[in-house]
Length: 343
Image (tube, rainbow, N blue to C red):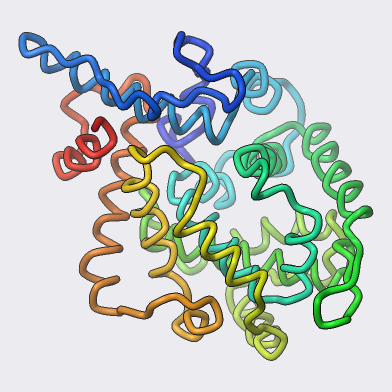
């Protein structure tokens, strides 16, 4: 069962509380790169750094009206699809989802038809934060929200998918509601979220727990139109092997990887922190994905640098997104991340 420190509902404060929010982009305190420091009050310095990180994350991921949306999903009465002790709640409440989500986008791009639909119909370049917020909202609604909100989120995605049809650059037709493509997107996500939680998650889950997580995700996949989604880790691995022959490089996939990892639309001050997320996400990808995406494979560096840095960052974000965390709970090794963010 996720603690309140892990859940979005534990940090409902929105960026509207600060006066430096850019109404066009959402709150972005990274643009000024300032933290009010006080030599006489080091506790206030820590709190200032915590608020800077937390406001930046919430502004990007949650967007405006976070209080209202939190009430609709987390505190509103009504039956839920998943009980509070289900593994899906534990995994999706953890900040390792930041890394898992980026890994999923890179992994999904290796299917040419799935990537063709994203390239032609997605607004990930013109409105990347809006797309991130909609994805985060879908996961929150289906995982934590009342059944009415979960069903509304499913219906909205299916409606959007109806318009995503076309011809890929290799001449093959595609449609987003194709159960075969839906399954690929689903299993790539599930595999990525598990990979990130195993390495960077706060709580320790057993293999049996992860089987239950796959089964929980299958409930959502069924409602989206996925035919026979995996219901255990073994089935997940089997289906991933089945799709392996369909995966290949494409110009769209390489461009997406470059955009996500090298040229994201971020202020310079936050790029070092985002770079840690990107390096951690890449370190979780199978070795065979690197060449198609033109990504380096540096196993020693990934094991000794990227993953430890990712662990520090997730601990720091976990602390920053906990409003009631005592100052002494800030991770000692996370001080460097806070320092980077504050510059």
